[in-house]
Picture 1: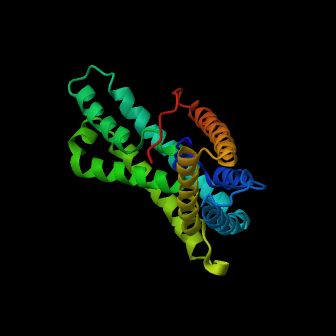
Picture 2: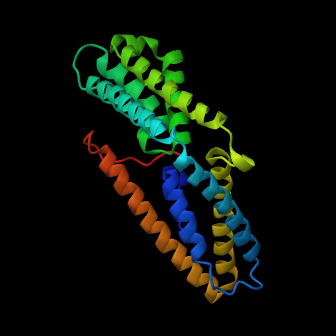
Picture 3: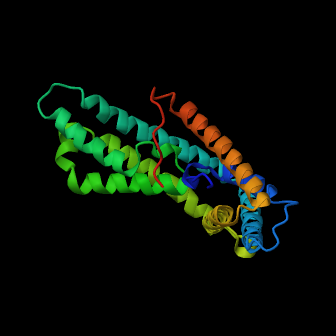
Length: 245
């Protein structure tokens, strides 16, 4: 069985490295008659397309601007969450209850949203903002937290503006990170699932060696991703939580 990996915790550069190392494990292996070959070829094509989009994005002058906007929305997220969390410890009437309700919304959508991929973080933050604005205005007002939520909303919109500007730029071959990343993730999952099923069904020694190699790589990748999340969260003094898909 191959260890399940939550790709949403991998930044683009991490997925780029992981994809290459995963495919390298299959090189030189005798896959004849296993049915795995077609999935390797498919994942290889998806990786090549992702790599082209990734390398082009690195050269884009807006890439560092987007990273800065992401850092700013991360700070705004932590400012809002930490403020509400502090409110949950107050003895002032109604504060702990109101704060608990707001924090429950944050937990359901992404307590550690800044550790997610760009797309997943955007989804989490926009969902948090939408739900709080429609169903928790009284709680936000009581805690005087509306201004901080507005700042989070503003920083999220600023990030999305730069991201949309990047997407409107001419893209040779039509390849973009947004278009190639989900395809690569899907094809890697299909490949891993096929290897796992064939190992279980046949016990093929070549596939078992591949399975072991992939599990070692996945373990190392997850460890590195969690370590990065821990370093990022040191500013808040909290251990990283499990990211949402």
